[in-house]
Length: 437
Ligand code: PLP
Image (tube, rainbow, N blue to C red):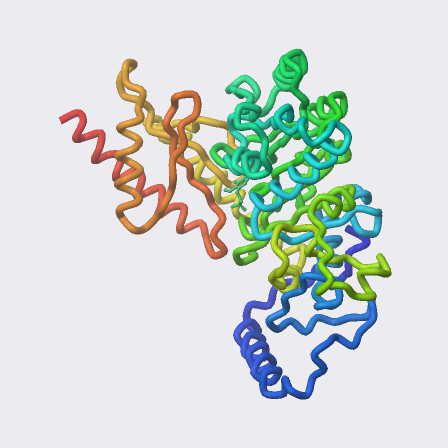
């Protein structure tokens, strides 16, 4: 963290928030009042810019040097906060880009991996390429595979179980790849997850990365939710093995106090993305691009135009500071721990999967041995949600229906957890009374 600017650690001053917001409004109003006085094309040279930030489209460097340079800076800051290896940072030959979603990030990395493989194997081999995740991987991987032309029969959702805490087991990954190789298929892309959607499970990057290395396929990490927690030293261990990874994505719009939409994607080798996604129409020809000294982010994403997401993320980092962002994560985790404790204390309930982050997976224990508890828990969930005071969703894992209590609201406090638990207990008591009556 030494290399981040010291004032990123400044505490959040909430009292100034309204005042600063009105100054931003004044600034925007002033900009439009004087817009005719500004040169249309940026006057700056690479390296020298400040963010101006109004209706910026920033598809290539020349269309908005400030937006491009700020994005590169912010992505390096974020990478440093996560202690990513230097090879993922611009300063180390890699680089990062802000996408709208993890789905977009995975489509782009899959396209890069596909084109690299097909350059070697020949375009007709696309039907042979195989993509791997687990049965806990977000469905976005399957969707992205379909979008880049992977044969739907060549998508592998490798089964996980309680034995590994619903993480990918390296032996199972190897066995699946061996079987595919034996039938003439080609392993292409493997996705591990830090904080799976349903349960918050974590795949071991060290173990799975070794498999990826042995089978020479693209290794991506989806840290959409829990990546934010890895800025805290006590959670950084989940990124151990990151040096074995080709690309990693996380969504600041999930747990990093950033508004929709914002997904960070880092790649070790940006030229693989550019080779797959770049277009050079005459209309976009310019000296900066031809100098090859600048980043044209249009070649790192699907669309041409793009939002100025870097400004949003820059503001979050500058406004809150790293220390407060860590505090936000820790506070949510503390609240989740408290909720988990309340569940454990009440013998009518159980925690179904061990908690790692701010997600607690729990249920009312089935009353009789022949009952799986799904109807009871579904009813409990419906009752709680229809109160309008809380909203949770469910998951079904290994045939077990569970309720997911995810804590991540900006203003969630202990009293909200107490209120939620009271609501759950009251509804559970009514349901159990009704059942016994
Ligand atoms: N990956 C994980 C682990 C998620 O939890 C989610 C959303 O819940 C996604 C991917 C999908 O993210 P996006 O909507 O940004 O594509």
